[in-house]
Length: 228
Ligand code: DX5
Ligand code: ZN
Image (cartoon, rainbow, N blue to C red; front, side, top):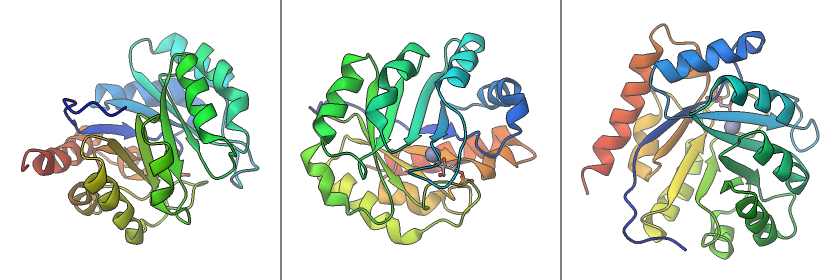
């Protein structure tokens, strides 16, 4: 249930996908020191998407070194139900899964919550946005993918912004996340469309001054949030 008194805040969640993964802890801690609000951890199974990254054993090791930061796992996997318990056990705070391969989305949402995590539902570019009407009461966040999931460093798809606009119009207090090709050049249209949770990989990881980029992304979202 969406709480009407909930106040939307801007949150920046760097994706470490394109970082030097041999130095995952150092790279993650650097992002946190530079102002990241949360870490967006991209989990891939080589089946739902044509790429592989890492799973819960690595997330658990990272959690052992980073105690307090909010961890979101973006589950780009064919069977998201399978990893709920192990991700919860690894200290994940939010379990964001794609609805496309799932037949009973409400059941997965409930299981994620029972495991003690908040729940995000993610939409690939080809998935229409209005399908979330059936799940939005159960979800804490909706992720609108602005690239085809699987790889960092792709071009932002501005044709996805209408989904964000539609969600913001219909669900004024919902946390809406965008992911894929988001950075200083594309943040303004995301913020104006209504996104308040911003995933950004290459644009932050590759920046000479990460803190500056993170701050500018947050400022862009806040300037829209504070207009209304
Ligand atoms: C893509 C991942 C994204 C990606 C973002 O499948 O879900 O989180 O790492 O990276 P950029 O910002 O480089 O598109
Ligand atoms: Zn992601």
